[in-house]
Image 1 (tube, rainbow, N blue to C red):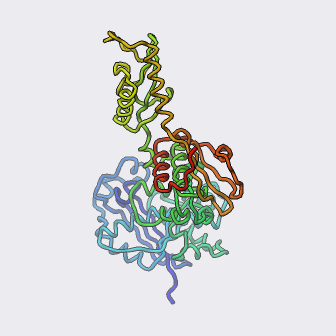
Image 2: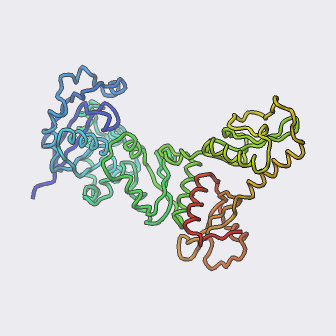
Image 3: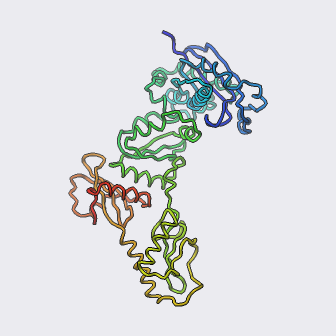
Length: 454
């Protein structure tokens, strides 16, 4: 039986992602598990400019690579050296994504099992302050020459790999290279136990960066399956590669229903504003309906842009939605249009200086304004959605009051509540917004039997 061999690889590139950048240097060291049996390195002409920051880091400039072979010319050699060998690198997904992408562009279909020396070192030499190649080599007394060049870093990684094999008394590296191992797809900085603890239940999950800050919040019907989907596939765009590199931890919260998970996800994204969340940020309302009283005692209704320091009666995603509501109120309550402001910036108070003839009686006018606002507020329904809980011993509840999401929570299945106010006591408060109410109303329309109105 042929002895398992390893291809220890390091590359230098023009940038941080495989789709938009190119390899400028590659080094491959072949190791048979005991010793080095082959070694090869070369500069590569990337056929594009090398940015100054990359030159400052690696020392490789455009002049150095102008006469070097392009990747197409060496792709056969690279493919031959990598075939039927475990692909080893420090932060393996970075090097693997570049090599696979450029081999595909050259007409070679190639995949391999991977071994990350970052992950291996975390398992075998746990507790170190840093697992970057430079700091790791310093901590473990590994001499590293020609840093940030493919040959120097590949040689240092080879020494590190050899030492890890020697220290690996529990067979961790053998487990890591199995095709079914989570280490074949987990991000390099994520502890496997964070993934293993995920249940196959409905809930919300959180990804954390190196300083324990939340960088992504997601909702899942099956937490383990959904999180695993983030790490599968071969997407080489910069955003995904940076995202995976930044994941250092995971936590989760189990929810009773998918709707509760959606509402919690929405609230947490708006509270934490994680850097890698995109979609829900687009649902931020932009306009509001405001009430103002001018110095002359007349009250005005106005549609204006939302500000942090002024409370509005109702929020809208678009100016058009707000204008429509204000026009309907004006017609229904016969409010003089001179006291309705459409689409103006809300700065200070409103005061109509022109066209002051035949103004309505101030008390009657203000009373109509108040009636219009009361009607708008009173038209908002109040109800509670009773549904299944996180287990068979409890129910969940989502409380809506005056058309606003008030909160949600859980209570015991045998509690025997009779009054809505008793259910409300079990609710944890959350902030309402248009998107959360859109989710709730869609659910109510689909499952009216789970709604209790009051």
